[in-house]
Length: 612
Image 1: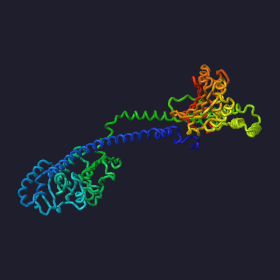
Image 2: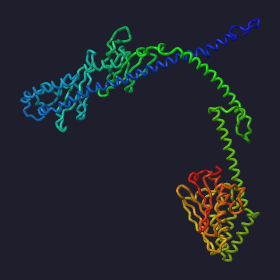
Image 3: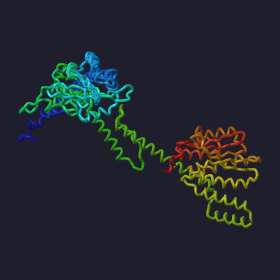
Image 4: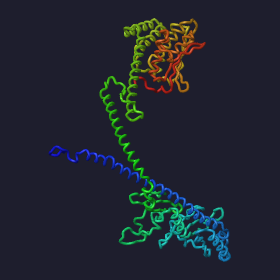
């Protein structure tokens, strides 16, 4: 607003408006972009570091696997000891054998202790009442397994090991016990259960290894069995300062294993925390490493060059001017195109040719303009094709109706003549009149609608009936038709002009006996319609001229003659329009006669006609 003296207030001054625009359009976007850039850089740095730690933790599982494999070798050694097996199953006087066996068995077990790292105990459990139990032999009732785990052990396979992780009461490292069945040779009978106890030093050394591989000495490690926390290296207590509790008995605030129980890492930027998770499938355990993101990232100010800020400022300014220039140009082009569409005549649509320079790149508006122009061209071509087909159909109809001024009068007259011939027992004349009447009726009914091959063959039969009576013994005809093609749709009055050409230019030009063959068949993926006659063949030069016209090499204006070639050209044009360019016609001549051959390719068999 203005002051009473007419001057502008400070809020409406140019300098104030410039400052507002600079702050909100340049400065704030630059600061926000810079902050986002640093955050994204931090995120990817943390992600790559955690991925490396994840790989190191997963590689550490090979060390743990080797220790468990050493325990499995102890099972194999115990099961292969003949003295132990013989004592448990075969020796009848077991008390007397025990005293002679105990020295050898204990020496054998001592060797296993020396050869196997972390081996803390060996036991062989049996329920044989004749045994005298002395280490390492023990009663089955003393096995430290609950009913469910014992049943699982009884149902296990010969080489399957059941691992049991025991949680100590002093919140120290858990110990591991493995159990496996003891079999006779060839696994024909289970004679006991073996127990191998591993020292809790196994997990102590394993967590020391994880700490060395992780690099972050302040990170904490958590060991879960299912959803139960059984060990943690953290000294954290309950987050509620009202009372301190053991980390194992009250794991509030500690990371929990996910529902998927899958290995991987997670980043929690809002809490400044990150976790790595690995699974120990043999033991059903999950190890989680939890640390602070600040322990991974040393800060961006020491690593990013200050010149990057200037480059970002220049980039943002360039993008600012480029964007608004592009928007202004696009808006002008849209307005020009929309104005052209709005002012176009619906009954006479034309292509859009913009007066502004064509852009080098292709954008959505150019694509829209190209699609509009393509639609106009296709619509114009379609209208032209339909109009041309209508003209061709009318031309065929007019040619068939020449001299037919009163068709109904002619039908009645022909029918009267036929009935008179029948009364006079002249069946040949009656048949000829019936066929002629059918031909005239069919020719008058020609339209742009399609007909079937069956209809065309019926009309061809009537036409040839008349010509057979005319030429008597000089002409015969036959039809060879594939029954599966009778429903094939064709332009109307297609075969009769071909038969008329065969009679006019072939049979009528010779006194020899002639045959006309009308055939329809499939050849591979194509459909072939053929009208063949054994009359006078077409001269070679004339054959070349007609085929050149039918192939499109010779324009209709340059074609010499207005007889058989023109009728064939009419058929060719109707076929191209009806079958969308997937059909053709040609003449073929040999010593035996001349054939007019129509080829319909497979793609056009089910194509819709020009009325669709």
